[in-house]
Image 1 (cartoon, helix red, strand yellow):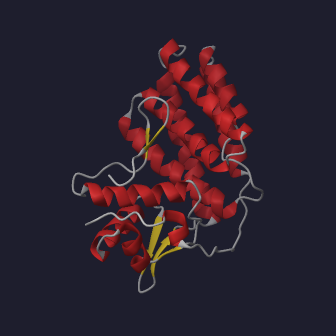
Image 2: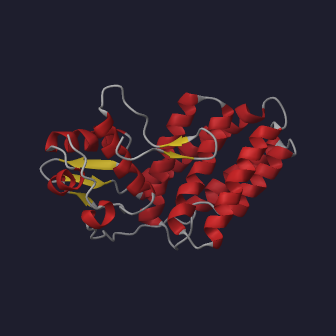
Amino acid sequence: MAAPARKAPGSTVRGPRRSPVRSPVQDGIVQSIADAIADRRLPPGTKLTEERLTQIFGVSRARVRAALAALAQIGVVELRPNRGAYVARPSVREAREVFEARRIVERGLLDRLTRSGPLPAEALARLRAHLAQEKAAEAAGNRAASIRLSGDFHLLLADLAGNGTLAAFLDTLVRQSSLAIAALEVRPATDCAAHEHEAIVEALAAGHADRATDLMIEHLGAVEDRLAPDATVPDVDLFAVFGRAGTAG
């Protein structure tokens, strides 16, 4: 692949699942654009010009179009007839629906994760190692890393719960909610403060499943409460985001 999938501590992969139909080159384009959207280097409303993307990745327009179609399937790119492709810009209603879906899915994942009692030591070690990365990113003022790690925390919980289908669905929801926050948040902030994640982990460590679930629901609600309409559309230079990958194909 032209760009590797991001990984949270352990085996959690942050990124669209690789398709058996797509080539490694095309998967690399999908991953590169998806990561740039997740890291907010490509804000909602950015026009994804086919010609520029073919120059950036060194591929044909057909490959670029296929990659954009794959991203549209997971809801992070919008294809507009006769106008081209844009980074999706969720409406307030769509954003609320995404957060509602996240509450349902993450409640179920926590229930599955805590069904057998307190988490094993290995699982807690992975979660605490991840929290350490979040705190380090916050302390360094690294907003891009904080955004990525905040989403990866939720995907790590899904990975530990052991349901691949729900984890894949949550990956899509995390990407869509990140877009909603980028488009609609009232004030700049990371998606999820590390101390809120830490409280969830400590509740899990103590075997307080209901408390952990309540904290998760409150946590997602607090993120959602920062949303408000914003019609600003950015002007982004795609070459500045990607450079020239020089991928052949």
